[in-house]
Image 1 (cartoon, one colour):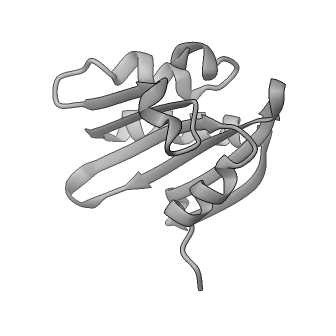
Image 2 (cartoon, rainbow, N blue to C red):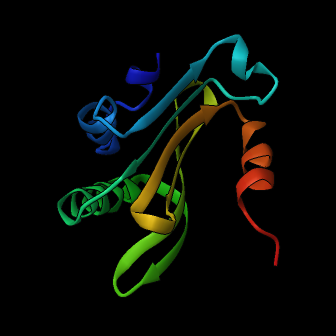
Length: 131
């Protein structure tokens, strides 16, 4: 299900290309594991990156954010260092989210999640800081 969940998104290629690479940590969850979190699927990858990889990820985020209905980004020197994208819902009122963050020491994390209508409150509570 998680592979099909990302159809039509450029970030799918990031997970496919780098998910099994040495030094990358990929987590894929679905089913009962996520029921308490009001999510249907969760996929994340954390890895060290180089300039070529970062450019590819930035281009993927740029393409996928065209489908977003809500975008929150932190941009430093023209590079998205942190991003939250709530994508337009697919069938059955499923909400889709992409989260991205460049961490310390040359690592980055890319997360894809999807869930029902009530997942939005959970995602906002977990990832959006109140000012």
